[in-house]
Length: 315
Image (cartoon, rainbow, N blue to C red; front, side, top):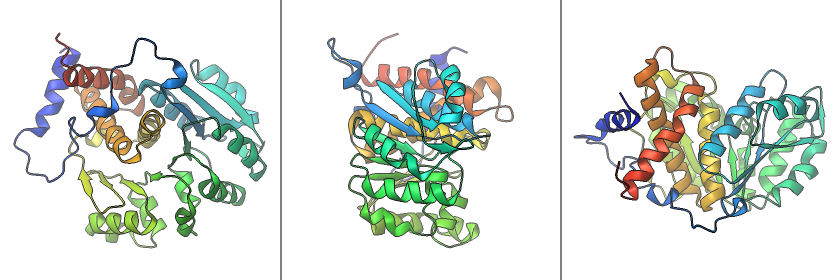
């Protein structure tokens, strides 16, 4: 089976669907525009990723690579200084910026360094593999309130705010949160079962209350907008339930934010391409053996085939 056939087979999920507001290629079409001939890397989005810690370097690596695969022109990883060599070796196309840290975990003193780098970027992704500590909580809380570019909060970036989600209301630019059910339940002080029973209403209320875009990950991921709109993902498969899958998704979303400046469109595009790539990959690996790097490796095919359809490119 070639990639075109995998693409077409994955999209059969859209046949005869009755789901309201599904996330489709038509919704995200403007996220994959054809580049002008005179395009420059600085015109294709500049993303700062704040991620990684001892034992969780893979999260930062996958998020950064996913951002590159989704078209971002310049990606810089702000990382613990002790881990910089690891990232330099693993990330050929991504720049690194070692910042203040202690024993492989960022500390509060990194804030000014990160803000300085963020002032030169179009969006910032905070959280994959960042670790949990009092200094991380303080660092993330202040960055969320002070950064003057759109922020994508994932994993430990979300966990850092669970004791004080009100900090989201102080944000100067759009914020996207990408929690799974457990992270969201802690954020709103409810059990996972309570969230699963009423996830759409709870997601809608949270997005409206804090004026954020919420990507609530589960076996049926939904995207809630501040205006109350809910969009539903029908792509994806159980093989995606592996550690690292969310890091790839966060990198996808952050990449599109850097390129378009549109938080809502980017959340939809990231979810769509991430799930489509996973559905294409699983045709080769099977659900049982699918790992996040399989999805990462198929992003290029998911985007290319969608781009070709949108732009009328014939095979």
